[in-house]
Length: 488
Length: 131
Image 1 (tube, rainbow over the protein chains, first blue to last red):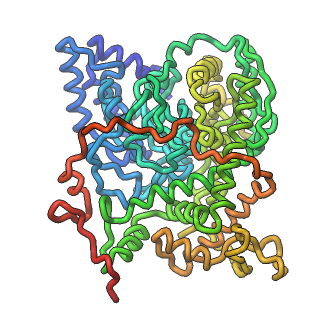
Image 2: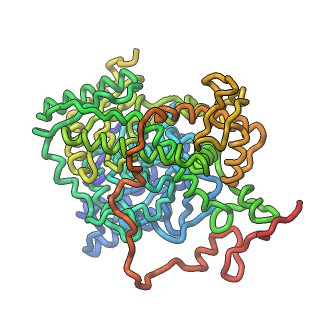
């Protein structure tokens, strides 16, 4: 798209130095939204008035000689499953359509304190369950690069918002790939940090042992700043790691000389040839930059899908039990409470959410717990053990982020299992809690972007960024790929 | 709703045997017999506080059966000596200091409820009413 795009880092620097005003930055991005979001539908809600008011505050601080923070005046879009006090937070579900949270998510507080300006709440697959953002109660989001195709999901609105220049930074949540897969399909950077690095307080829970919040950006450097801003211990989240913010930006220029980049020799097949080719080129680029490419095995990798689709629905069925028409959201009138619960949930939840609640309820039910949920947790351990062994030999691993480029809308809508396979390469790092990121690396079929996934061990987010930055420097230009006719 | 329907959901599944639903080999049904019946799904829907129409029940049964078939890839793994992994961090039972902190405003929370009265959530009668 436009090559004269200003990075979030530069925008903030310019606002802090009074070179540009936050008001101008916001107007420019709101204009993009007005121009294209009718077609894209990245947003469930655009916060135009709030953003303008906040921009005036930021500019006032600069004028008064006060520093608004490292993200001063930067427009930020939030996935609509992060609580914003007094501002509707829907999870793209009918059951929460009118709910206004009584508190802010910790990431929201930290972003505001850093000077960021919220421009809107982005669309998602209902309760973050899906890989295409077609399962939204408010209609699908379209891929800004080709509006006949999906943006990926579940954070498709956040990925599209950055790709369409509605905001230079957005945030999504990643339970099985919901940041990395849409980032790949929309040609932007997407990061799932180490589990526990970012507070989940105020993120409406899907799979509590898997969920992490992370950024979408155009550049690896912007992603580093975004993640540095929101990470660090939060006493309000008991799974929050007890250490300070991630330290990422310093690694970006270190290069990869001497680093060991692992190729998983028994990686599940299924990626399309155009994606495979770009991943090969990514290995070549890192080798040329001085990295050592090593072969590793992760035999249990292929069992990730099964373990995930038993564990995540099980956790979801518990988490979504709270939506019962009593404390928040909608209620369907019925003569007694039990009928009211059932009527409310039946009317309020969409098909995919019901499907996963039922799968999870089954996996947890008496007589099946050991066979399904219990075995899945043991498989989870096997996967973690295999990755631990692989990381003895390699500092990072490289895989496709998504098996294919963006697919056409409706393609997988009627086949749940086909949709689940979109997450094949991203799921294992949610099970292990390890970080993963998708970095745009040229184009594949139809001139659409390919994302290469960098995986690293727990709390080695900095090494992952070091490699991600090197990949970004050596990535084939987007336009070059689209003209090469990799599409047969 | 619920995507495509797969027919032929008729194999006997013994709910009580060995924990895991396995098609009863005595019936001589093929490998394609489902791991879950409409009765099972109906029970699950009740547990999950969801109402399914007959069509939805048939579709859900077929879809869940197809998924459970796919998930059978872990059946062959020997997991007897493997410790289950419940969550990724080494943290356990993190407690905060027992001091008074700021809590949510009651009226603001109740203001988001479908129905509230006298500082409490209001619900329909707990005891069932005949329709």
